[in-house]
Length: 384
View (cartoon, rainbow, N blue to C red):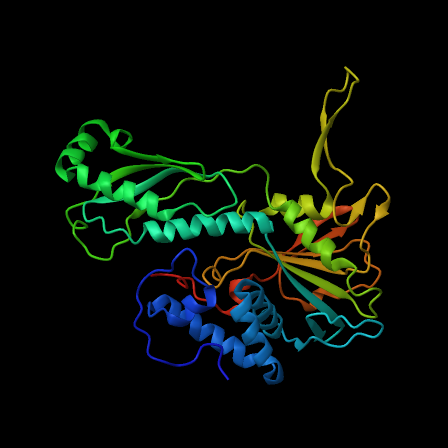
């Protein structure tokens, strides 16, 4: 069995906003996605044969979660571990994702995809995606569309037909050469604007004249620029929520327990997010002693490992956090962190990845390998 069947593929179009990930990877004839298919097929072939049918179904239903499960299997297999998917655990009908057999330790792994999008957020994103896909069906030989602002006011899908009618009418009104003169003289901020508003949507679009090389090409998607999205904070809340969801799921396990989180937050994931989530938010205190005005940095008691009542989730031996997709394997970050108060110690020396540990009351980084090295991914992995 293969994850992606061998067949002739002819579709060279980019993905639509509402495309199912598995369907797009399966149909695309673009060389880059052929590379990804071949790699995932190789990983899939390394996955236990008796569990391949259920994993393939998982890919079709939830591509990101299934990809991360396959990724973790391959990542640890390449470090010399043997992994058994969904083992039985005494005392519970729930099954962790893997039982891992290593040189020094056997341990359990649980994988979790962490996103900062709620169900309501996902529904809102799908309404926008459907609208974008419909607008991208417009034939606009002379202009790209810059979506400057988009507000969907309700939980109902706005009428793409109304928006498209307004856009098409405006495209007929404007001459490419005249708009180009305006751009050359005054800049892009002075191009014609298209505004539409009703009880469900408020959208503002500006026209960007196409270059001579781009004009008249059939099938080119008209949307050239999408509205920027801004948000406060980072991915730490989503990371904490994902860990807390898994930390006590299996009760008191008889083996060490490693939770693996793939953080795909829109707010990005960096060192600060991880450290704040696990060890507590960074805070500063200032002495009221006028003779000693030095600021002191410390961490609040609000992390996964420790709160005001003491150590937390001590049945968890460690956390592996990644920000990985099929396209970024050559640059994907990871944070492997040992729980400083774990009740069951895991021998992290058997894991090749660089890691973070608390040593003599200090948070220390221990050099190891990265994801690219362990998976032997080339530096030019994702190049169109």
